[in-house]
Image (tube, rainbow, N blue to C red; front, side, top):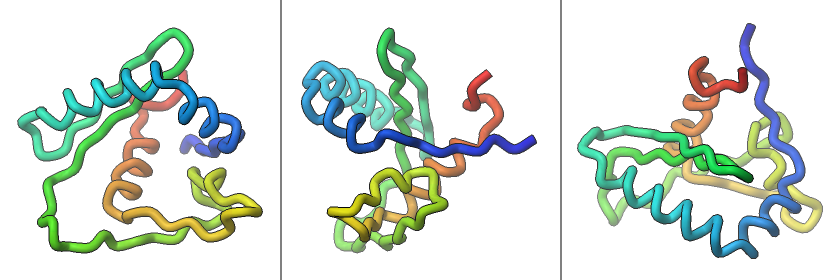
Length: 111
């Protein structure tokens, strides 16, 4: 059975993340460690008492290449980013597709 991922409470969670320097500091440390990985694509999960960080990197791209933006739709796992005040959201398609691929991995699903 395929796991169905739907995030909710995006605005509340976003406010928590933006106002919490502890979360941002820990996330930045973890992301920095992942970026130093010798593998071209790597990911790691760090479970902390009140939250979990999923960090991943992707192959480097040339600096002069603009991101290929993908618009989010209501059925997307990150659709909580779409709000009444912000009805149109687009993210770089490469990290977005990498993230969605990671969501489908059986070893990353809730038990």
